[in-house]
Length: 276
Image 1 (cartoon, rainbow, N blue to C red):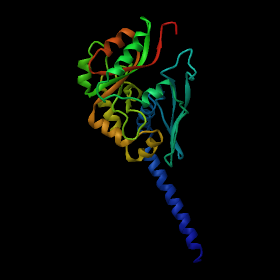
Image 2: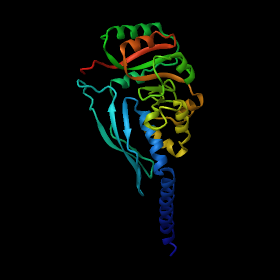
Image 3: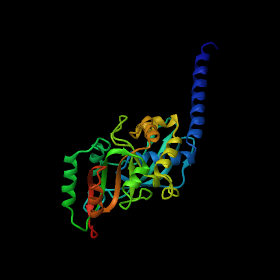
Image 4: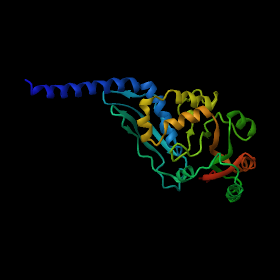
């Protein structure tokens, strides 16, 4: 009987560990919270992609998951990047995150060298002017706009009135430089998470709402996506905008934006005309 006690103890410990893991899983990965938190996490981790996710999540004793589709911002008829990537986003009981493979695009290198908030740079601004001069007059482009200094949402709205509106699904925010050990700046596309509120509510306030939903149990999963929860929280507290990702702006609009003294540089990820 004495020899059996260690085995019984081990079995009891294993059963208890499984029970605790299941309780944590069903609390932390409750479908509504999971969908909200990981919708934002996947989009924030991959600014290169326009990510659409299903309105429902499913939970079982092993994992919680939802379906997603990703379209690269750089996609066009001459691009090598696949145009549509479908798959599941899931987190299992041991906090292992699974997403469809999302390969680097042309934009990835631009994100990893993002310099928003680092002051004026006349050389970078001159390069941006030359790049815009090379576009045809009827061209449209996806672009990363770097600001010289971080601005509040109100300062950005006032300073660029007439050029664009933040509350749309064509202008997205960078809420940090490259910081916190992350390879890319903190990115926020409000409509990926809050489709109803994104065109009528402050984008920064919606970001803060999303960050408030993140718990300590999400740290492991976010780390697997290349996200630092501490940095996300710092960006929420600061509430400053370091740059923008714009979709489908015309050449004249981008030239007008570049002429603002608050703009450090504009970097084109893809340009096209209407027949592209």
